[in-house]
Image 1 (cartoon, helix red, strand yellow):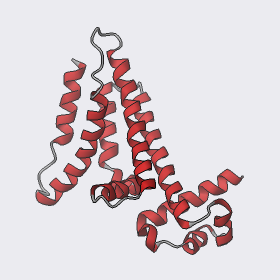
Image 2: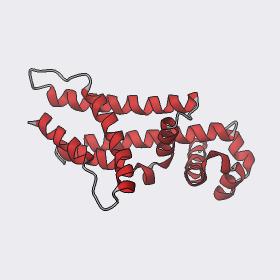
Image 3: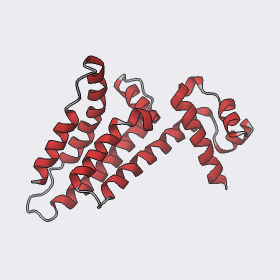
Length: 191
């Protein structure tokens, strides 16, 4: 029951933080959304900041679970799994807004240590998943996986997200080709 309540608080906080950010969100609003007292939130979290970071960490866990689900789906071929992975990242602004906002802060070099720790965790977990994917892909071949390959796809696919958003501003009627280029790279690897 305690974990369930804590998760309910985090989910409500995620909606508020995604909509209004850390500074404009109050614990009173989150408590009101849940129809509980603010003291109930303090039972699980020492401060609004702790709740904020736990909420981002929860969103990172959800995001990583989605990536694992995509790459474990053996009903679709590997190329389609990568396409789904890239699509997940393209939609991060709407589906995982706290992660998106955190990445924007990183690009502005406006993050705190705790935020950098969460981002480092996200990128490491994502790289670990891709290392497994590429290791299984190359296990039957003589050559080994280039150790830089998982990192390349993790960082390039994040570039896909920002490249698409920038492209939509500069040329809103022209589709982004970054995803197609990354998928062509996968095609070359799969040959």
